Length: 89
Image 1 (cartoon, rainbow, N blue to C red):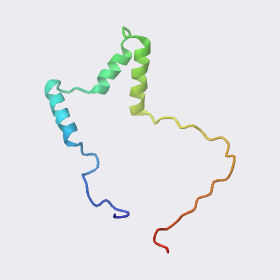
Image 2 (image 1 turned 90 degrees about the horizontal axis):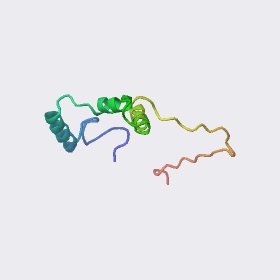
Image 3 (image 1 turned 30 degrees about the vertical axis):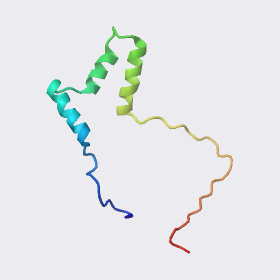
Image 4 (image 1 turned 30 degrees about the horizontal axis):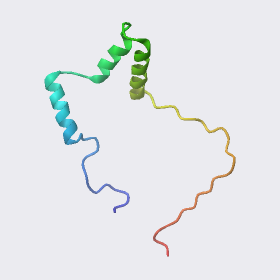
């Protein structure tokens, strides 16, 4: 195993074969289709049930904002970390 550098595999961000094929098929059926746009249309459509619209807003928000992290307000005991090297005998 190499440490510190990437030594194989695909380029980061390259879609896998199945996803690429799916995207080509979707583009052929619905040119310019963007699921986020469709979700935003559902989320803002006043004829759609309010609970459904809220759920879509939650899904869309995850694409724009990080999820909140619970704040640790108090530590009951100190944390100790022991670093062990597998190369030292």
